[in-house]
Length: 239
Image (cartoon, rainbow, N blue to C red; front, side):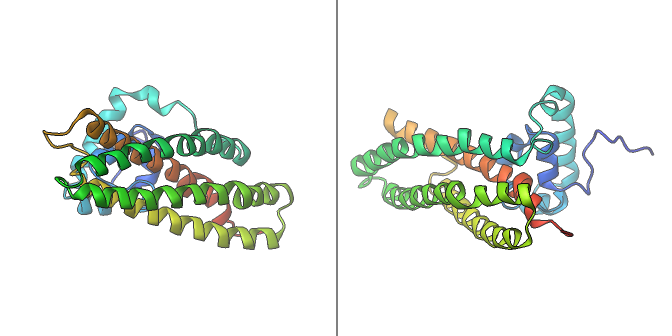
């Protein structure tokens, strides 16, 4: 039987599916499948972890792509220069974090103060969010001040000593991504998939909604770095 090259196959990696079909990121989030830090693995492995048969995942993904073919023709960051991709990450994702994290902090602090006695998990949510906020802001500052300039310097001169330092720095960033992902996972578990209780007030509900948006934006941010930008430097073989 002939294989349709436009369809996803059982041998495809999670990250490559998202790169070809960005809307798949929404699907993987719904299935609680990590496509950013854990994206470099075959769909069979992700399916086993999620408890859904791989064939079913592929059927649903291929159906989605058939229904939304235009979403495969948008911004192709695989073809973009590193300079353009860095500009996009800083302008969209880093800006989002710097603007949104302080606002979410206000919501988390208020809700934990007002409702923490009755819903003690909110105290842990507040603690974890404070840790996440600090780590993400330090992370973005490091990328802009140190790592991204090294990338552009390597592109310009391809000097071996620059690449060596860059690869060490990228390994540290990937470890930090893993740490942020673990905190987001804990937040999702504590909030029962960001579903507020029936007694939750409007501020309580908005807090959960903004935390869920933060999770989605962070996953996309990390995906662009781990799966598109970073491999350009970590997978260099010959200089």
